[in-house]
Length: 323
Image (tube, rainbow, N blue to C red):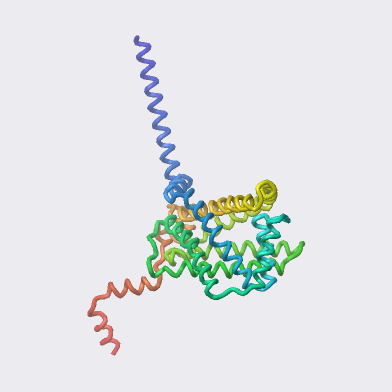
């Protein structure tokens, strides 16, 4: 009996030690970079966000691309078709010919100003969804009515990006050094796009320096996804097209968009958590040692705050002293 009691005590002590050790490891993991990123991803509901972004991109941005192709010169239209071939994996099947026919026929028809504005406003549903992702990842409140124009400004910026990218692909067509030039243009354009996007959609409340890790992570992730897509997506797309027709291509593109925005949302989480870390890594990410150094007060809000903080008599005293 004594031996049994001693054995039970030893087992209890070993179990307690193991639990204590596991608790310390869990606390260390939770407080580390990976644990914080995981917690932030669950906090913003990353699965729902990337699915919503993919669906709205498919329904809102695709019509915008067609409208841009109809209004752009032929060289830009050809470049946009080449981008679809390389990025999405459209090969030489009937779906590719359908896309080319839509783009070429759209250039022969005129697009009214009202029609373009309707498509442009409809596309803002995607930019508003992306704006909410950035705000939740950075734990910032909604911008309010003063920032209502920013999703539309982002759409205008993405239109310009499409035009420049299409023209660049058309001008740099060919192999050899042109391939390197296209890679440089694509990388630089992606970095600028994902650096500028959160700054605009967050209403300028995060400093440019603090947004650089997010831009770098998003650019690296999308470039790696592009390499993966160029290798595997064309075969998958052609297989689904042969089995299910155009609807199979739609499912493939939608799946690719889910992967794309999974990368975008994950990179946003990584960037936002990185600037909040204590220590040298966090100081480097936000550009200063202060924990809240990543925050930025827009000029309009700063002027309004200074006006509220100033006493009513200070205006009169300042006027008299100036006289």
